[in-house]
Image 1 (cartoon, rainbow, N blue to C red):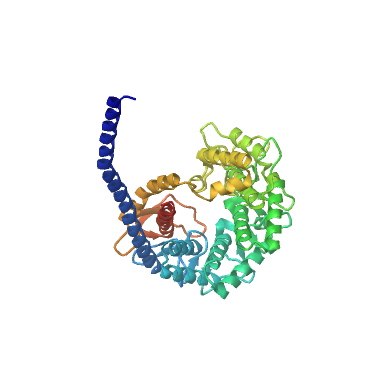
Image 2 (image 1 turned 90 degrees about the vertical axis):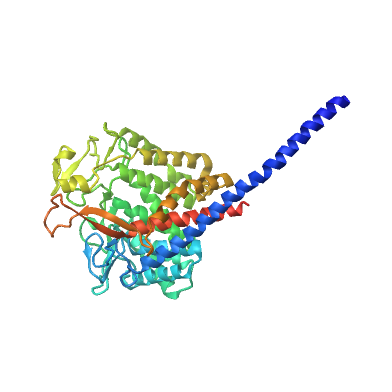
Length: 478
């Protein structure tokens, strides 16, 4: 290399170094500014959580919660209007609100949030019946201690909340109630491995093994959570294996290898309510595909996945020309089934009474769920349960966390902007069906008013705590 060339290269290097020295402070300032923005928003999120939790506690009924209250607290609703002595167990009621309080505590360390979660638990425990479960509401003036309902995630959500809280606090009352509930779950499991709609025996369709509204799926989810929290409990493991077998034997044979909403004692699809015929059910089938994968992750036995390929094939074949799936598909013919009360079959969706047509979901767009379930099954087969479990536990890299944090930021900012000074989130001009007197069919009339919603509170707290969790994850990479 000539002296002249070396001097040129040195000059270029000097210019490059000078340029970088001038740029680096700017880059550092940008990163510092970005970190400052994240830190500033995080503090606002924490403040919004504390305000939201503090306000929402004021709408409690004896420590528990309903679905909706008016801002002046004069009117309350669950599935029906409620008095001042009744709380909802069914989500988004008391257990779901308790979970939101618990999430707030874990994200912020706010002791007040934990205290409110414990009060919600105590309200549930007061309404826990002699069997160890719950009905869908608790009326503290007239406690119903004789029925366990597995409908609409009622008993299951209460147990999930108590188990989660039991991991955070040393409270004998909460621990005993949790163990009583888990023993009930084992005792109420049917000999075939499913769970009934209600317990004890009612002498009707409530005794059937029921997938409708996620009944058995939520029971299995609870037992998987219990298996993780209390791994040395042999009864829980045995229950899960029994449930996995039921998922397999309840699958209907080809050419319609899906699942029905409910099964009688002979493992046959059966009638439930007068508009719920024995049929193959696409939405139930999708739920069960994911429950099978959940069981595979819990137990690690690949044979659990064997029913899935046929079920996925049938799901693709049963799609209707309008791009949706029928809620009920007739066994044998593959035709959609539409039933009005009482067991009156009609040929088209439009022939149903408006109450049935608008309030039951006789047709649904399941395409996105089908694609997600298919992808999850393919990952299970490719990765195996250990790697799939790791992949589903959370984001793995700094880049993934940063991207997700950026994605949720806009929603978080919106939630904070919509919060009242009091800490409330109020749904303005909320429109909902008018409740008709018993025995009178809905006439198409709606009511409109401002309401405070437990579901909105739960969702907002979930978004806000997710932001904090992601921020904390990002900090660990630094």
